[in-house]
Structures are given as structure tokens and as C-alpha cells.
Length: 227
Image 1 (spheres, rainbow, N blue to C red):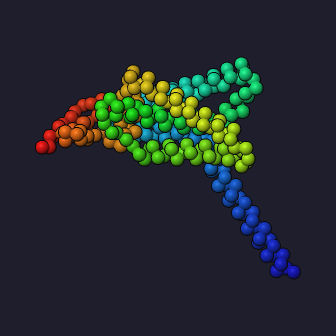
Image 2: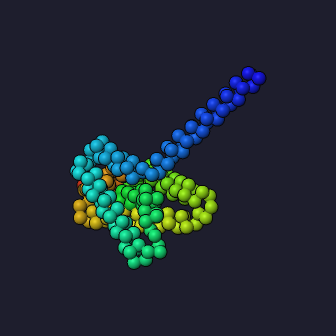
Image 3: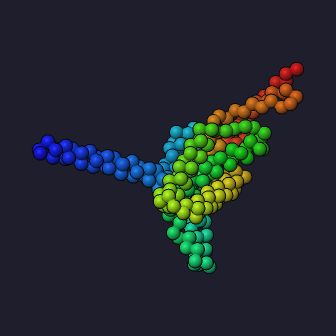
């Protein structure tokens, strides 16, 4: 009788430990999603601290200003939408998918200037590690939000809402980074987001060109024609 009781107590204790571990894991995953805006801002400041690029000390504060501008734009749109169409009730999704909006905004705030540099200079600067990081983080955040909020049922409305947040965040990131690119590109994370500052291209006439950029501006180039 005593042996059976002890086994029962051990079993219950094991179940409790497993439940606690599951709760801890779920809490970590939830925090990675809910606090992703804070995590991203901290990463931006860390990148600026270790960066040796020009104006690196000012870049995170410029980003932070645009961060609040992007948040204000989103909040204003939701406020006006609720004011003129109360049935939409956009407030219910403001906190839920805010992280998705900020992740998308930050991704394109960093990526789009690089695209503009490549278009202007006919180069191929890239940083696949950063791109993969943001793509995976955004997919994770979207999936986690949709699955947890829907409880596995009626996911379509949440999927559409999350897609809207991704598109709007991306659009704001593209718009604000474009403004900065043509106003003062040295305050953008072009050097930090690019894998390197040197690009070599080979046109059809087999003339090799090597261009060196600093803060998105061409500072040197060399040519080697192969016959």
C-alpha cells in the first residue's frame, strides 16, 4: 500500500515538473513574440555600439525617431478607422499584431536602402544572414499570433489581419527609409546591413569592375579588361 502511494506521489511530481517546464517554454515563445519590438530596438543599439561606420552613434536615435513615427502613423490610422467606422473595432488588433508591424517596418527600413544602392550603382550588396533572421522572425511571429489567438479555429480573419500588418509595416519602412536615403543616406544602416563594402561586377564585355562604397556612396573603383 505504501509502495503504491509513493509511486503515485512520484508520478504526480513528475507531471507537475513537466507542466511547469511546458509553461516556461510557452512563456519564452510568447515573450519572443510579444516583446520583439523591444528586442529589435536593443539589437539596433547593439549594432550601432560595435559599428565603426560614420555617424554610427546617431543612427539608432534616428531609427528610434522613425520607430515612434511609424507607431504614431499606425495608431492614427486605427483611431480614425474606429472613429468613422466603429464596427471595425481595430483596437482589438492593435496590441496583438503590433510586433508584426514593427518587425516588418524595421526589416524594410534596413533592407530597402541597400536595394536603392544596388539600383543606383549597379552593384549587388547583400546580407543574407540578416535577411534570413528577419524573415524567420516575422514568420514565427505571424504563426505564433495566429495559432494562439485563434486556438486552431477560424484562422482566416487573423491571417488577413496579420498580412495587413506586414504589408503596412513594410510600406512605412520603405517610405521612411527612402526619405532618409535621399536626404542623408549616411544616417542609414547601409554599411552595417551590407555583408561588405566592396562589390565586383562583370558586364557582358568581360570588363571587370570593382567598386568600393562608404555609407552608400562610391569612394573608389578599379577596372580590369579581359580580352
